[in-house]
Amino acid sequence: MAPQGLGRRALVVAAQALVTIGLLALLWQVADGADALAVLLSVNPWWIAAALAALTLHTVLAAERWRLTAGALGLPLARGHALREYYLAQLVNSTVPGGVVGDAGRAVRSREQAGLAVAAQAVVVERFAGQVALLATMALAVTITTLVPGGLEWPLWMLGLAAALTLGSLALVGVLLAARWLPGRVGPRVAELSRTAAVALVGRRSLPPQLALSAGTTACILLAFWFCTIAVGLSLPFGAIVTLVPLILLTMLVPITISGWGLREGAAAALLPLAGATASASLAASVVFGLVGLVAVLPGLLGVWARPRGGAERSTP
Image 1 (cartoon, rainbow, N blue to C red):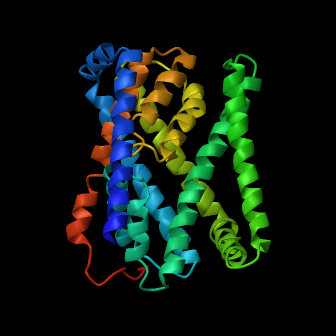
Image 2 (cartoon, rainbow, N blue to C red):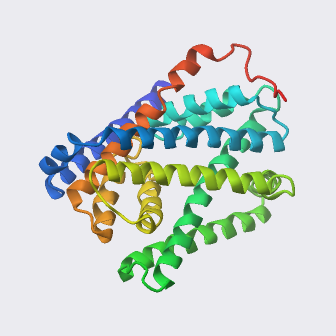
């Protein structure tokens, strides 16, 4: 990379670090950081272990989803290879600003058998499937908890936010589909990606396992966050978890902080009190989730040494 590019990248990283520190400092003042720290020092280790187990299972299922997606596109991956690469990608995403560097790395390292374009498409489609599952869970949970008698009562702004995210996502899909007819290079590339996603996600043989794996990964990450709330002493109904936590996690996609730190905590401190939590305990729960998430991806370090030097392994029965 040219020195000018490196300098620009360094400025972006510095800005993300400053935003992260600024948000966390603001939350310390607004959400009673001293009380949140006291809660952190008294967490229940058994629930932390349960959260770690849930995030570990999440990685296993997500790696299998990637393997399935890549296989549908003509890029066979062995299960062990897919799991090692997924762990490594998560480790990089959790420690390097940007949140997608690890995913780009696994696309590059798996390109030998089918080319970089197919490898990149497999990664993009797999990540897309995970985000769609999270959004769908939120939309369904908001609908059920609002309409079912005796369910949870959400403020209008919360319902509006959930509706805006759902409709915005549908509109984005519509824009992407319409972009297939754009002139120049954009149209054919969007059309190719649309065909790729259709084959990998909703093909006759792909749809059932894709649905099962995406449901599993979503359940695991929501359970992990729920276990972290229990670890800090919160008692929240699972209906609140499946409604609010997707919103909290989706804030991490905004690339203005390092790995979503600060944004996730701010969203937790703002949203979890809607279900009866205190802001300080909500802040503590989000911090615990972030720390458990870092521990959960540490096996990615083993992948650095265990990964074969010859590129991607071929799929084994």
